Length: 357
Image (cartoon, rainbow, N blue to C red; front, side, top):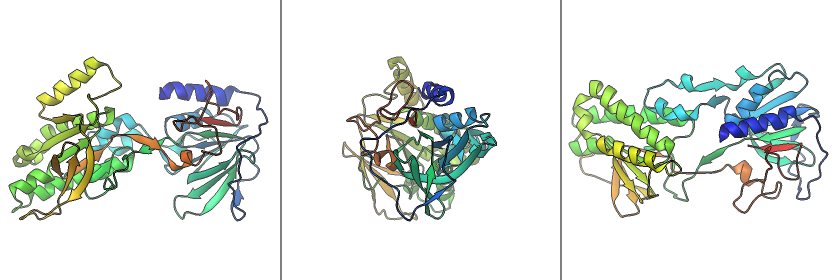
């Protein structure tokens, strides 16, 4: 789907020759009086928001278009091949193997700005951004705008599900790096003389939340890591390792073929993975245990059970980023919050000036 969207986006932006003047009936100004407009008038400039699949691919295709000025705006200065992200979390692949610097694919006509977009003025064709380094606000003019900011992790309102202290998301490269560090730290803590068996079980308990492709791939990679690397380096700790996969739905890999779902469930069963279907994590709590050297935490499940863990990886859902939410009164949206587009990813009412992918 992402590949198809990228092709449609490339065709629509790169091949279209005529651009229609537009008026926005739902317009309101978002550029403050003290916001500095940088980079000039922005005539014949394409601004791309995001360095994911669509944004990176479009920037690459515009590399050899010298008459078109390209500006890429994103808090991330690299593209990540996300299907291989779980492999980097356990060391199967190094981080550099799945990333590509954005500036490397930009031509002489392109520039990258490390910042987050916060609002857009479709009538004035102005985008307000903030630097990721000092939070200073500035504005950029555009002729065509491509919004490909992606989505972020959805914790479904669970206040205690925040990153840190053993809890990690798995969507970006720094997430995988943090997970890898915590896995190594957990084994090192468990190996310290005097650590009780019960605390070793807690430290080496891995809870993965979500039954989608990312979660299932991470569980498979974690199994390989334990059976290959850990067995050589921490052989005496292997019996303490436990992996639990929690999925709120009735099956793993929900959108996929049932045969694949059954195969994955059976494979995990053979490998000793504790798969809990139709069960969800409702909260996380700290607790005290006599003889523990390190502060313990545990996940509370919807069936009332409690899972102590050393590492919890949350990959259970996605939701729009703040920038997309901020467009409620700027761009037309469906009832589900999605921006309305046509077959060429052009925003309804803004054909020729704004695309979304």
